Amino acid sequence: MGLFQRAHNIIEAKANKALDQAENPSEMLDLSYEKMLEQLTQVRRALVDIAASRKRIELQETQLRQSIAHLQDQAQAAVAQGRDDLAKEALSRKAAAQQEIDQMEPQHEQLTEQEEKLEETLQQLQSRVNAFRTQKETLKAEYTASKAVTSVNEGAAGISKSISDSGAALQRAQDKIATMQSRAQATDELLESGVLEDVGGGTDDIQKELDELSSKSNVDGELAALKAQVGAGGASGAAGALGTGATASTGSNGSAGSSEPSSAGDGA
Image 1 (spheres, rainbow, N blue to C red):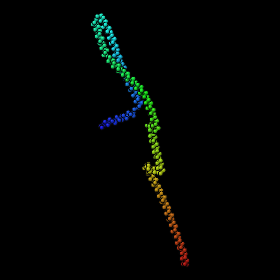
Image 2 (image 1 turned 90 degrees about the vertical axis):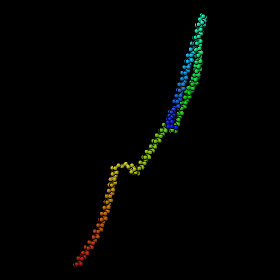
Image 3 (image 1 turned 135 degrees about the vertical axis):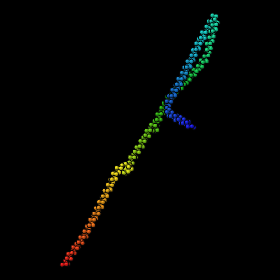
């Protein structure tokens, strides 16, 4: 199969599908009824034309018969007056008129038969049109009822186009609400755990510098406090050490003082 043939088949298939979807039984029934009425009108017109032709031939035949009768009288009068030549001419014209009648008679019979057939066809077509009109209205009522029932049933089942669209929209809304609720719960948990700030990465450079400065100040403060604590501890130790040395020195001096008088006494 050629490319153009395939394209033609595809276009035809799509066109048929579009026509099937766009076809409305009520409209199609009305269109068929209108076409039948047009056919009925055409048959009536044809019947009128044939009847008119038949009537015209009948009038011509009547006139010819009247002429034949008149020519017959003229021929008799001419014979009575001894005018055979006039009588012969009248009889000749009479024969010509009769010949015309004989020639028109088959046409008259044919038109009569056609008229009778058309009258029969017209009656049959009229009966079909009347029956179709009744059937058309019945089918249209059935289609309307079936369409209403189908719409109600599809609506109840949730499969009609409008309701299914509404159901889909409702489902999308529910899914979106559920997603937002889940996101809200997740952010709450992250905020409570303190992870959201690290995960979010929303701090800028200035904030980072401020945080580093604050952290550095805290470290410097802790270091100063530690130094102060260590310095206080060292001073207390040194004072204790100094006190112990003074006592020992006093004890030595006392002993020396007491020994000096003894030496003086002994000298005396």
